[in-house]
Length: 177
Image 1 (cartoon, rainbow, N blue to C red):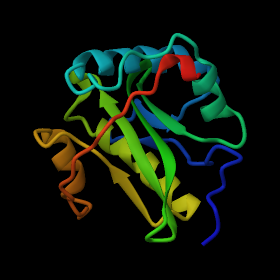
Image 2: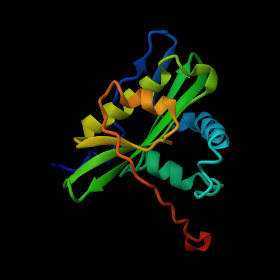
Image 3: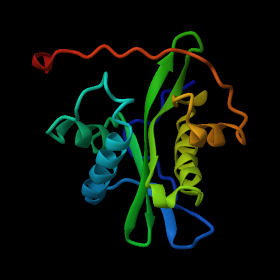
């Protein structure tokens, strides 16, 4: 299998929900302030899950490099209801030596509480799924807390295989950067 096309953003058309004003599309540089606000909301709501990760870095350099400078190392999609940002998804490519294949790892999927149950999660998930297919990945993977009803709703219709596992996080010293 060929390596994913990591040099440019996937040319995935925006996906619209049944509510014509809601769209999900690839993040652009001008979306960064809205994306960061959504990330901050997400981190605040999931603070108990994020304990081992630590706080977000103050600089945007790594984020901008990963999302916008070839070779791309991450992808993000943002959902808007009209002009209002209502959710985001982010992903990065991983490699399985055992499968000898790439996979797309859905790293984050967040929708503002008032916009849940309106198919926004599905719009964002479809963007990630389309990217995984475009890159020739063997599969799309994501981690979710066992208690998350939203995560279960995403995998049931797609017949994803649920694999029980533990995730370990080893923070690296700040002085290493």
